[in-house]
Structures are given as structure tokens and as C-alpha cells.
Amino acid sequence: MDQTKHIGNVNQHGSNSSRLSSPLPAGGLPTESSYFDFLTDLQQDTRLHDMELGALTKQPAPIAAQLSPSLSTASSTPSSPQAVVSVLVASNQSQRVAGAVCINLTQPAEASQPQQAPIRTHSWKLVNYLLIPCLLPIIGLYLLLALLLAVAVTFTITPSYLLARQLYWACPFIPYIWKSDNIRDRVGVVGSWLLRVQFEGAHCITVLARLFSLPLRPHLPDFYILGFPKCGTTSMASYLTTHPAISGLAGMPGNEVFSKESHFFNGILGRSSTNSRLLYKSFFPTIISRWWAEAVLGVERWMCFDACPTYACLPHVAARVKEVSPHAKLIVMVRDPVASVFSAETMLRNMGVPLTWSLQQPLAGDGAADPRFQFSAEDAAFWHDLECLPPEAPLPADLPVRFYTHLHSYVMAARFADRLRPWVEAFGQHK
Image (cartoon, rainbow, N blue to C red; front, side, top):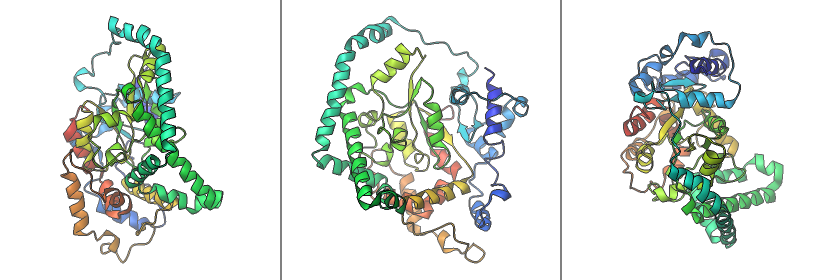
């Protein structure tokens, strides 16, 4: 397969080579276009231009110039999501692919060497062709007992309450979903309460079943989709999981969000648990998933990933990910930062989150003195403390509320180049 040819096709059907570093076209602006101009100027020094991204990863810029001239003349179309996946996995340069910035998914020193199929050693064959098939009934029974035990413990109410409380601390927008007019108009007050009870019960069963089956979960993610929010991480995750060699999380059944993003480093299992490799392993599939992919389906190498779009935004996460999974590789999804901020506000308002600010209102005066952008010293100190937070330290008690509800956090998160710098420093350019 001609990889460059397919990269060109994806660019033609996704974002063009200047989309990332250019403001939205004038025809697509909302009526408050003056706000777009103001916020764009506010972020002028930190938006991801091709030259800035090139400097960040020490790659020559512009990025598109590194690719073949056939980018503009390719005519065939990728026939499936696997075509996009093959481009992502095989690429050896910083590329923009349908809004994704893939920073060296393969080692530069090995990029010119053709990859060889892994050697199936005698020990591998013994384990995968004899031992695991013989133990399948025992493993299946163990997983069933773990699930039944999780259900029984959940009905004691207390674990469900405690886990839901921790979940709502890490993701403070979730409780507003059950109170929103969208839900209550459709199912009523009683129906929204029942949906909340069902969600909390399913979350508790999922978490406990994974913890009870922890001996069968030895895996950590091979790569991450770091973010950014409202930049297509859900779509990219769904494309990747269509490949038989790639799995996401062992998430809550029927819940798209918690099947791709763990929120582990946001404190979903506790403020002091974000550096525990053992607890983090509970989020990923069992040895059966790997055995099925490699021994039954015959894929060369099975991989799993975590796709949490807030990881790229929070400056303390890079060091913790490095501690837990130092060999993982990184994928970043980006779009125009102004549009992403607007989209994030729209999503939270649709969930019923009572934000104290709105970007839909016109600017006050010429915009320079708009009170919405007069951030306090406390906001700056909070962000600085996050940047200096040691990996072993517990998360600040007010972290989630500040991150999800304060406008200052959205402006800081939209400075993509600044947010990516800790990741490049922690993992190196080749990741």
C-alpha cells in the first residue's frame, strides 16, 4: 500500500494542510466574530502553527513539505477506517492526518527498516496454543465469579455510593446530566433518577469486576490519545478499535465515553491513586483479549490504549503517565483552538452545567477590558501549582471543579503548544 498516497487522501477528505494554523473561514464564523478575533489574538503566541510544532518536535517545518508531492495529486480514497489506522501506525514523521498530529509513532532510527513479523518462540506457542486453551474453562469461571461477586457487593449500596462519589469528584459535570431539561423532558423526574441509579450501579459493577479479576489484567497501554477536548478523540478511538490488533479499555458496557477514556490520572479512583500501576492495569482487557487477537486471529502484535482528551490539558499528567507507562507512544488530536473552546462550552451547557461565564455574549467595549478575561492571581497560582505538582503527590481537592468550570482553564488548555511541551520533555521526540 502506498502510504503517502493514502495520507494525501485523508487530508483531502479531512483537514487541509493549513487548517491547523489558520483561523476559521469567514463564512463559518458565528455572529460574534469579533470574539473570535479577540481570543485568537489572545492566543496568538501559543497557537499551533506549522513552524511552532516543528520547533516543538525539532522537525523541519512546514510539516506538509516533508511529504511527497503526490499529496495534492492522489486520487484514490481509503476504503475503510483500517486505511487511516495503517497510516497512523506506519508513519515515521510528524504528520497531520484528518486533524491528528502523530508525533513519530515509530522510532526514527528504525523508520527505514522494514518491520519483521515477531518470532513465535516455543515458549510463546506453549502458552498460547496449549496452556491458555486448556485453562479457558477455569479462566471463564473465574471471570464469571468476579462479575457475580461485583454484582452482589454493589447491592450492598455502600460501595456504589463511594465509587459514584469519587467519580463525580473527578468528573463534576456528570451529576448535572440527570438534572438537565433534556433528560427530564424525555423521561421525567422519576425516570432521570432511575437512570442515575442504573448508571451508578453499572459503574460500580464494572470497577469491582475489574478489580476482582486483576490477576488476569497484566497490561498497560501501548499508546495514548491525549486530547485535545472536542477535537475528534472519540472518532479516532472508534477508528482504531476497528483494527483486530487494537483494543480500548475494558470499560462500562454500552457507555461510549468510559469505553475509551479512563480518567485515571484525573483521580477517578482517588486523589492519591494516580501513580499506582496495579490499579491502572484494572482498566485494560484481560489476557484473553491478547490471546484471542494473537493466537486465534493471528495478528502480529496486540495493543491497547487509553484515549482521555483531558490528559493533554492538565500539566501534571505527563509526569504521572511517564511513571506508570514509560514506553507508551502518543497521539494528539487538534483543531482550531477557538472552535474547540466554543464547542466545549456548548457541550457543558447541553449537559446542564451552570457555568458562570459565557462566550456567546458580545465583548464589552473593544474587548481588551472584558471582565471575562481579567483572570485573578489565584487562577495563575493554581495553574502554576499543577505544573509543579510531584507525581507522588495527591491531586488538589478543587482540581476538577476549577478545570471544568473556570474560563481561565479553557484558555490555558487551548494553548496547545504549551500543553504539549511537558509531554515532549517527558517522553522525548521519538514518542
